[in-house]
Image (cartoon, rainbow, N blue to C red):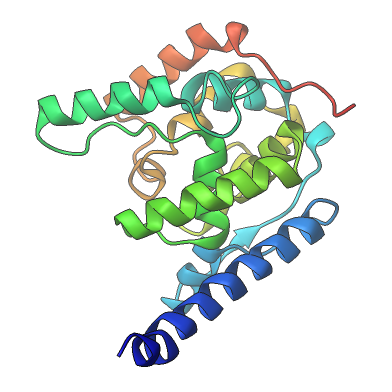
Length: 227
């Protein structure tokens, strides 16, 4: 009986599991030196009939303020952790239990990027497990600087607007290199709900978050250049 189960259930599952992670490893290797032009989130957007606006821009052509804002808002310990901020995860868990709903996220920039590149927004224990595995792989393949560079290039800033360059062009008519502190903080403030806030730039909650990010930006620690 066990042999039959292994042959027809476990073996195919293991093949798919290993095959998927081999593909992830290959793509991470390729994307360590090549621009990322397609992600799982972008593909899903296209499959649902949406159009994509995306333009890759290298790290040095992204305003320092945008990098500071993303770390200040999304992952204060980004430069020092190894993919996971367990203190933030625990704090988010306690906040969600108190609220009786998932209202606070504890995911790091690395975890968010793993999800964007290879997974979906659907919440499940299986997806979280895959996210953790890919995060570990990414932290091994890429430097922190590369992770931040790819993150800012693929995250969604509005309906079909992917990456900091197209966001800067769409909202402010300028390149990502020329973003001001206030503009960078506003763009990063969009991230929890870009489709909604992209159409409601004067929402009080959005502007309050922008002010909080502006206060924290100077303390954001940027990743060092790879040795």
